Length: 347
Ligand code: ZN
Image (tube, rainbow, N blue to C red; front, side, top):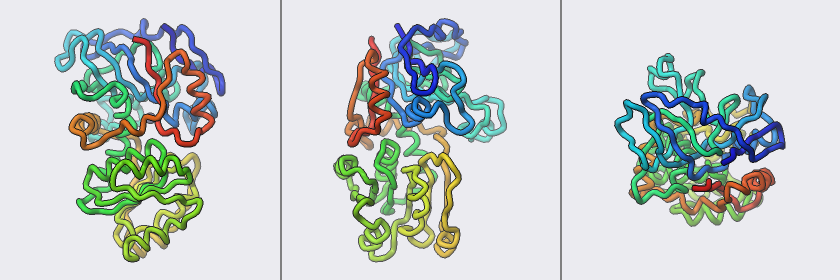
């Protein structure tokens, strides 16, 4: 079976790339046969741009990091997993001895090795060797497709945690892409009474409005701050999650924010941005940043299993592995209304 290889910018191929045969199974590792892999904005960005910031694709690299699969081999000291277990995997492996990891902040360990971030290969391939500690068993009622959504969902759960959501908070999520929508779901699951979601894509906003107590705002036609202030008796929202990655949206984060509100920057900003410190000051706003997530995969799996969060409506299209080059071409065209596209590997 083949792997999906990004040879260079705008050049993908499905070909033999037998790295998994070179991957030795450590005593605390498992070998996983891949089942479903989601297409992430970062995968698409590497495809269209050949890199992101300091991470440049200098040699052929396998894409994909949002994954679920089946355990097919276990190391001698593995205790929590066995052959045939259905699992999802956390794609970043930190150095266990680094200072950040020892402090519990392993996501910001500078030495973290993260799938499909150059030069580390991703998992659009037959199998992968992964540490037991970063591999999570799935309950029977969580599908492989839902499990491949745990990775993006983890970003939303981490953001809601950083925001310290309190029951009854009202939040705004800027951006109705996959990360915006999982953040909105996480904010509701954490106790928000209502979440506003802003975007310019009506199809995505219609989908957002069906996910719960979510009020869509199309910023192509509506003034975001005016709508929010009108809906909150002029007070504003307790939390703004910036998930669009748009410098323009980021500039406006304080306008709809209430006094002592919190802003969490979630969307990746490719360049430096400006925001108005004066507006932050007069509100005594707290500003947080997130980088991926830490310690949240088990929570995400538990919420999918209990029904506290339903990610199924976000999965708008599934491709066969043989069509994965075309899947990336479609993803790169930023098709309207598509939220999460996934690739199902042959079993
Ligand atoms: Zn991702």
